[in-house]
Image (cartoon, rainbow, N blue to C red; front, side, top):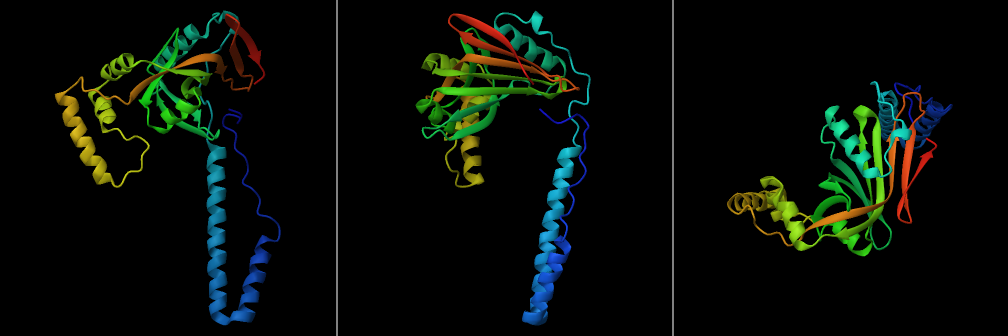
Length: 271
């Protein structure tokens, strides 16, 4: 986060000569193509002008959006525990208490065999001494990525308190019993979605999805313990965890935990 809260930039100036350039192009079209050519040049010019105006309006929208227009909590790293897990649990709880919707949502980044990255948003299922837990189908894109590169990064962002947490490390696969237990502790809807399966595959039509979803809901209600063999629980064992507390004056506090040897090293980072 680098933009100043409430900061608005002035719109980009139109480059000098831009209008003259379009006029010259229209004049040339008049001279060579007649009336039809002029109409075509005017249409092209109008399209270009409209596109430029839309781009400027979008930039102005971005620059006018306010950042952290609330009072942010302070963070004294001297009070931080030696292990990142208790602090993470505390921050997630405080985000929930501050009214952050779905504070357990997180961004998961993986890479395939060629190193091409993918990122998506999903739910945190647990965080304990083993690591940060999440789940998916083995055949999904994230599952395929983790099969060839069992490393990942997580990102949490809680705007109401100006905080984010980044987690990076190796990923292991839980056994089938633990994976099944993870799924069956969740809602009927979660089970129905898992029963639909085929995540990340090409879908022929929304009607096809509707039929599969309806059948899956019926089975999930009828068989709350229905097995989904492809459902897999993953555990990210953290090697690095960064806690970022935003500051309206841009004096952000960044506390980084790095696992070295048999313990955690704490270090303060420049914002």
